[in-house]
Amino acid sequence: MDIMDRRRSDKVMMKKPELLAPAGDLNRCKTAIRYGADAVYIGGQSYSLRSRASNFTMEDIKEACEFARQHNAHIHVTTNVIPHEEDYEGLREYFNEVRRVWCYSNHCSFTIDYETST
Image (cartoon, rainbow, N blue to C red; front, side):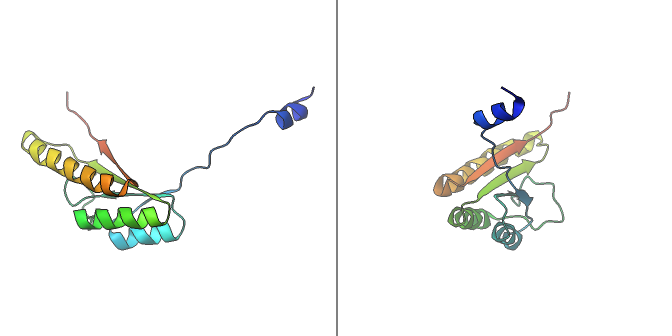
């Protein structure tokens, strides 16, 4: 059996790569999804270092998740801040609120990106 025969006989399942786009506000999020993004990553108004972006209120996150669900896309809510001791209580509340929005739509996820100092 030569290599061409093996290629035809082996069933190779290839996953389609995900097109992930950034969005700084709700309008850009919807535009990315309309133009084919499989997923969009966004940051909330709190705990995001994207200072130029207007970012998302909880209502915006909820609307983005609902829009994504209607278009078979996903929203990734990210945080990218190094929290200080005084931020932790607010951070926990923020995560809980995002989780409530996520549970509502089930088309969102959120990622915690952080660094620790040693």
